[in-house]
Image (cartoon, rainbow, N blue to C red; front, top):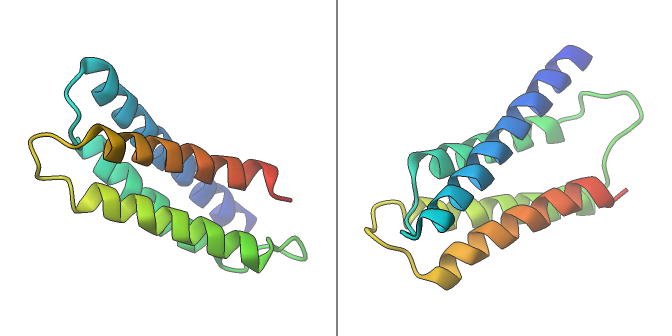
Length: 113
């Protein structure tokens, strides 16, 4: 089970890299739109996050409140990316909110013990 958890964690980190890297690439090129890397990153984050929330470890379970916060943030990010993916341009506030929520989600994962 530990091997499965580590594979899910690895894929979760790849999803984070796709989401944040895709968003920062779009931001620095000047055209704010949802690219495929952002969409795939958001999907990977939600799917692997649900897998990681399953009880795969012995005794070291994360707090249910932490899991709920991370699920809410993940679903919000996914919705913001999914429903804006076909637009030619996305509002800068919306786009920066995607980046901000992605960073907040990572901070919850790291700092909430």
